Image 1: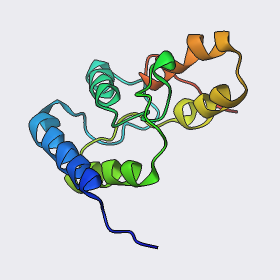
Image 2 (image 1 turned 180 degrees about the vertical axis):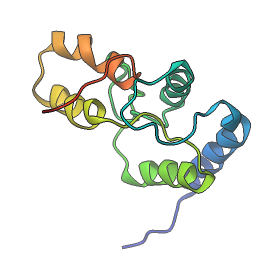
Image 3 (image 1 turned 30 degrees about the vertical axis):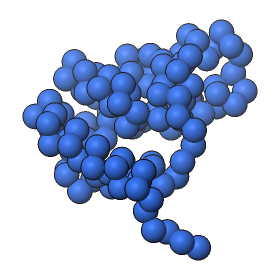
Length: 128
């Protein structure tokens, strides 16, 4: 298996690094635990969604970026944010568990109602 990055992948890595360098002052501190995301975090999340650095493969109809699944692209984005020590966005149970479930088995009404506010940090879910 050849894992050499293509020109496209190198360009994505450069793009993400440039974004981080230009906008890192707007990023909240990584983490945040169980608290409700504040305005700064939701604004950061909106920027990440707009650029496709978060919710990359969630369809645009539901508030995502709408890209085709690509594990290498996701790894490049995660690596760039990790190396820079910059928040990669909101990660919680709603985003990691509810959203994929709705995409797979939710009704159209459920998808339209819940996915976008969940990935934007406006609605917080928990599983018990």
